[in-house]
Length: 285
Image (cartoon, rainbow, N blue to C red):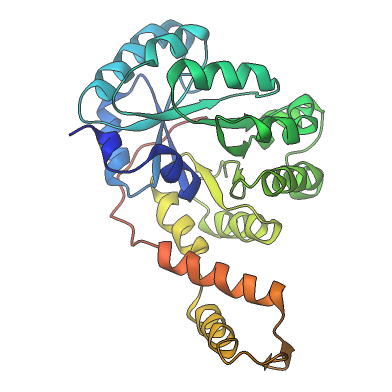
């Protein structure tokens, strides 16, 4: 059975919380990445692979996706796109430094798979609405480190706030899920990762790019609503079943936006899955 018959690739990419990068020239890590419990494994043919290893990395990715493996691939060159076409395990492609809607459309049509537009430049941020409108784009993702370098800013939350918010608005306006937030580079600081995830959730982002398996469980926990949130959401949902014009829960009037928030919490809890034990390796996106 082809891996793609397990789940529709668009559905998988749009519902994913965790996207774990693996260098394309480290095939011994591919299966370990799957075992980490990450929602989506991203085989990287761009920044994580040195120039002299690009061809070997491409061949390793082709071999794995031609067998039983399935993954998203971050492409680096036009040759990558051509080589991926028709591979049964290809979930889609992540396009770095996305700025041009026509280019995204051509790539999606070429590989016949969905595209994740990784926005990493000022031009990309300003084009976010147009990029989100491309039929083949399943989701937007944010690369704050490259954006910070592009605009000579610090990659901190204050400097990156407008860019993140613009990606959230562009995604919502085009009916896409919340965008995928960028990496937390310090893989040993769980507190920092939790803070980054909390900040992303507050803005309306709904996924995270990861560079180490140990970040998977923390990420899934952050996107899993607390028991208190679920209890509140259930009470709100129950309160609307009677058909009363005005209902209050905990002193808060339940109108359409409140009900939508409650439904979103319950949907997030329903989609939550337990994470598997992690393996130990790293990747640099």
